[in-house]
View 1 (spheres, helix red, strand yellow):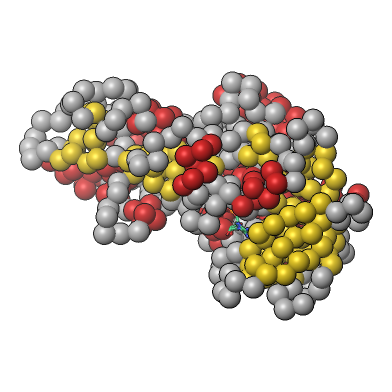
View 2 (tube, protein in one colour):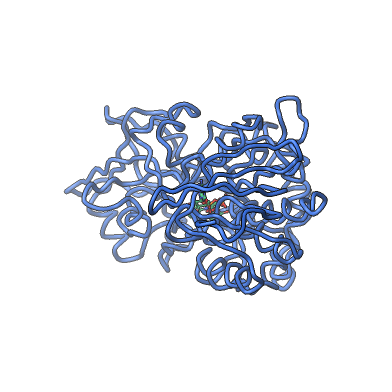
Amino acid sequence: MTIAAKDKYDVVVVGSGAAGQAAALTAQENGTSVLLLEKGRTTGGSANYSEGIFAVGSYLQKEKGIEVSGTDVLKEEVEYSKYKADSRIWRKYVDTSAENVQWLANEGVVFERVQAMGAGEATWHIYEGFGYGAIHKALEPKFLKLGGELLTSTAAVALKLNEDGSKTITLRNEADGTTEDVTAKVVVLAAGGYLNNKEMMAEETDYDLSRMIPVSSGKGTGDGLRLGWSVGGRKDGTGMAMLFGGYLDDPDQPYFKMMSSQMNVAAGQQPLLWVNEDGERFVDESVIYNFSYAGNALYTQNEVYSILDTGVIEKMAKDGNYMGLGVYVERGDKMDKLAADYLVAVEKGPFYAFKLNIGAFCTMGGLKVNVNNEVEDEKGKVIPGLYAAGNDASGLTGDTYGPNMPGTCAGYAFYSGRNAALDAQKYL
Ligand SMILES: Cc1cc2nc3c(=O)[nH]c(=O)nc-3n(C[C@H](O)[C@H](O)[C@H](O)COP(=O)(O)OP(=O)(O)OC[C@H]3O[C@@H](n4cnc5c(N)ncnc54)[C@H](O)[C@@H]3O)c2cc1C
């Protein structure tokens, strides 16, 4: 073997983001032999940038006296999805979400606090050092310490089901292009969706991609979905990206640089005047309190501009932005005073028009799974030993992400990776 240390594993995990890391560590703790694959040079995927995860009934919420009903969350999420989300998947996720946070904390993930996002519920458990800290300071070192094998710059490029129930995975060394096959009893697909694959986005979604700005790891190229579909996994729940509202396109900078820019947040993420290319207002701009709705609203027009006058700019320079964007960009200190004062006149020139594109964090969905994250085929039968987790799995959303319960996307990724690995014990 020139790429992997062995030719046979109990578990091969494809992708080292939130879902893959949780799956790999859980399987390793269960005493199985695990190979964790990462096609990039570095690990963590888009999960590195995530700020926090969803849970109800966690130790942090209890300490703070925060009560959020799991049943209310379930009801709201399923209704929000127009019943396209799978209630059984939500039920198990919600019911074990506190345990998920506890497990991560036991593994060494440090949670700083729990908070709401905008007007939503306080379900967002913010980890120290972003998802990067959770993965690189806790999960991955633990996995390696327990003897897990991690290969970076190594992509899973093909998957085959064998008659004895095992699976053959073709690995490709991304540095020199060499390939090699390994077999495993269990494969967990956790490759992070397809936001960064333009052909798949064009094929699977209706979005105008010329206006969409992916702000992610850049490595979500749909490999997990294609591997799963290639062995009969059912396509389900494609078509949706997690939009997060207005985003400026600066041709001189990589997209991600704008993420933490005060100017981007000022122009793109505030309840300020929005007009289309004919100068018409088209929506109540308070839509930005749901960042996914804001993305949808921006897509109803051909072009959208955020209009700021000198008065607004002076006010924001003095008091800060009206609204923050997660914890990347804090809102201004004098927010409470300003909150009563949202209807700001646009009257004092010079005026500025910022063209708004639409930012997107990730796609969600693609492979139909059951409550154990086992991949199902066209007839609803489980493909034994094949799992999909995180953004590769369907069942969590309809056509629009629900930010009212913040953290559900990364929370689901950690939870579902672990959920898959726990269930996979039955094949080992
Ligand atoms: C800027 C930003 C902020 C976010 N903030 C939040 C937040 O606060 N809360 C929240 O809930 N969600 C948040 N999200 C979404 C969250 O990051 C994702 O839901 C989560 O990372 C999904 O985890 P995953 O494991 O499915 O995918 P990822 O974390 O993207 O990991 C997938 C990994 O698979 C690897 N891979 C792909 N193909 C292959 C292959 N063929 N072989 C081997 N490896 C492969 C990729 O390189 C990548 O490392 C945010 C996303 C972004 C971009």
